[in-house]
Length: 482
Ligand code: ADP
Image (cartoon, rainbow, N blue to C red; front, side, top):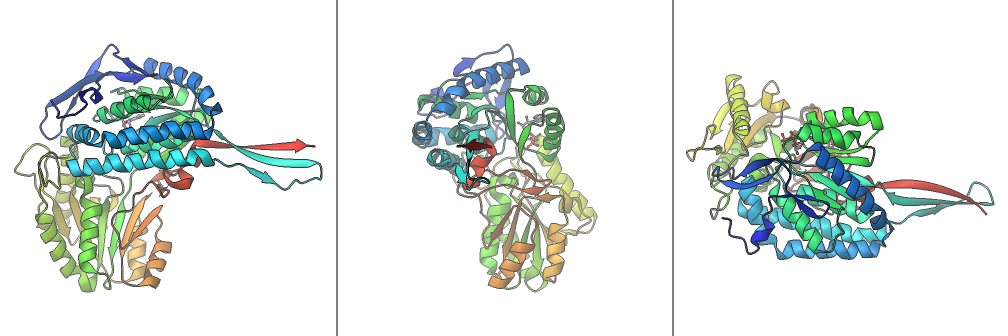
């Protein structure tokens, strides 16, 4: 049993239109650190999805008619309840996902930030009046909710990925049907219960755990009442949804994979760069889409940086997310471990040097040693593919032009990072990087206050900031002849 002050936050039935839905089938949710069974949750079907979409359609009409201030009040209460139960939510999150408890708590607060921010924004969905093109014409632009939205989310941020879609959608006056990752449905079910306790009307937020991801995705795309899909996950599934959505010109927000470069110039503060690199590379054991994937270090400081990084990485405590002091938890699955192992062996076979780590951890299971490789080159798999694990590959470079070309030589364009002591070089690199986000002298860029998202094959649309709510609004131009 998990140590929860509110054990009823651990739900195993789907949350369909405000009610628990037992369904016909169940699937197991386990703790990746121990393999222990946490819950047998409802395995929702495409028919359940259709039912949730129907209920959302009914509920959304009234919701859209409410004032922004009324919607804001409910979202604000939801935020307060999430904060009040942050410890329980973090416990559920660590149990189902594996990340260290302190990181899980950080995710709960980060997710709550989106709810708070969009509660505030609900009151500020301003339209516009435009100068008319004829003297008797008055032109107005309204901003109205898209309607019913589907959310499909990954396992690496089981709470925040829901919060950052549901909060702007609900603030805008939309309803939302969530299909969380099968690995981590428990955090999203707890969030839905708290939303209901905050006074959110039934039907506006349904959560449908399922192992039938593809057929639920198909229902989302085929159901004409579903007006938009917001997806976070792999580029491959994003591509599938885009293809499937084409028939109905489905609106899509896609937050897909990354291949983040982390560039260290010879005028950088090396200790700060190592610290930033640890944060951006090893947070969530390397399992985030903004995690550093390629580290480029300028020739003059290369050896010193590698030595400092390797010492810091070797000292990272690996263990169960609930053990005090753990910095690196287990990976989500054996397949995730295999990918890290493949990237290490591919790189070493092609001439890279293993500086620290490189193998399964003595703890067994899905634990992997935090690893540093040097002498990495563009020919290695790790240069092109997201490792999504605790592997830091270091490349050497000489000039700004060379490193910009290398950093941009990828199909992806989500996060990027640069460390330099020079203001003009910061600007030069910031402007030259083909990415949706750039961190300068920082390894941590995610905040609800800013538009998070990618370019190229990392996706389309933004989450967070004033811009994030635009994905859930339609513009309506009205021309009045007076
Ligand atoms: P990851 O590798 O992080 O699991 P995925 O893109 O496979 O990335 O999964 C992200 C989310 O997409 C999960 O909720 C998963 O169940 C869902 N998913 C997987 N395949 C499909 C599909 N064909 N259509 C819709 N959703 C899918």
